[in-house]
Image (tube, rainbow, N blue to C red; front, side):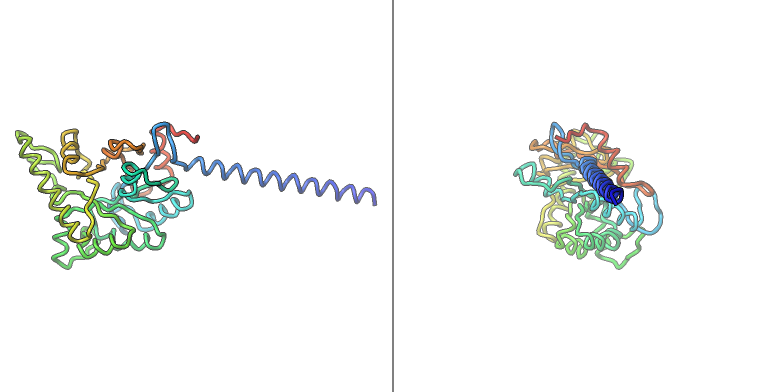
Length: 297
């Protein structure tokens, strides 16, 4: 009888030790998980990753094309790891007006304005209640608004679709130029031509970008605050022109994450992480985070 009581006593003690150990492991894992994904602070400001997408469709996979299931897996990863999608407006308001940002902010940026964004991305945004920033090419939207061509391989969104997505609050429209997303012998994207005067160059850039600014204001009631460089090509001279035109941020194709503080200059030449086919978003984010020293104070 005595040995039976002693056995039950030690069994209870053992169960308490096991329970405490499991609880401790769970707490440690949660702390590690929070720290591992946190992009909250560095010595210089908050860290904001921007993921770059182009097409989300069922074929032609590569550096700029992923499948709908891959994009959905990105949304699941971000949700499971406590990331919060934000817009460029939210980021700009944080810098200029010191408005709060959610913990672990991340921007999902889509370039060009392909129809696949409307057909394959927009429904998932509604399902997961997440946001993207869509930088459109004005000329392409104009052209596909005049014809009925819904080929997923190359078609772009229409102005009606632009308006619908903007009004949802899940898709923020930004400027990717009206007609400069092209390469010719004379000009590569927004680059300055050989022997082109500075005066002519500034006027040329202003005319193109303002054309899209005015059209988006007419369609959506909102004027873009951010310019996404076609092909990611830019220099200090072009950046200064963009600033003169009133844009408060610019986006490049340089790899990395961004350290943002209350200095407006931190909103220019923003880096991105290209989301390519067969790549893990978690691995890509860790690679981007590795470019800066993160402090979890």
